[in-house]
Length: 162
Image (cartoon, rainbow, N blue to C red; front, side, top):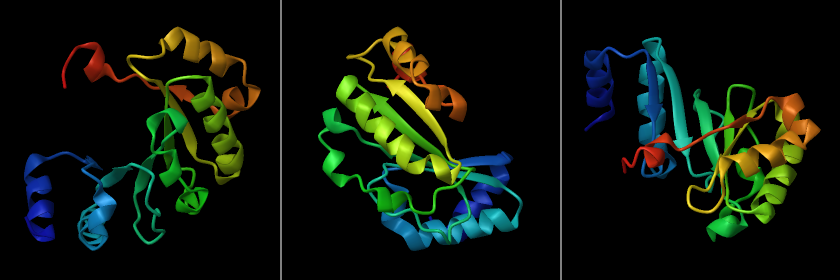
C-alpha cells in the first residue's frame, strides 16, 4: 500500500489512536515519516513500536514505544543509548526481564534516561520469570517508584493467543 492508501484505510476504520508496529517500522523510515505526517495532519494520536536497535529520529512526531533488549535476549549488543537520544515524556522504554542480570541492565538504562522524562515498563519473560518476582524487585527500587514504572504483562501469552 502507498502512504496515501494507508492513511485512507485508517480513516475508514474510524479509530483515533493508531499504533504502528512491525516488523520493524524504522526499516522503512521514509514511508513511516509519510504515513505519520499524514495521520498527524488529520488529528490522529500515533504511537510507533520499535525494537530499540535503530536510532529514533526526532523529526517523526509520534509516541515511541521502544524496547531495550537485555543480556538474556542475545541482542544486547544492538542496544545503544544514543538510539534513545530524543526520547521524551510522551515515550515508553520497555524491558523484558528474564533474570537479575536483565533487571540490573534495565536499571542502568533507567538511570541514564530518566532525565528525559520518558516512562518505563517492565515485563517478565513469560517462561522464565514470574510477575511476583519482578514486582518484588521493582518495589525495592525507589527510583522506579518515583518514576512511576509499570509492570506490563504479555496478556496474549497468558491466554495462549500467538
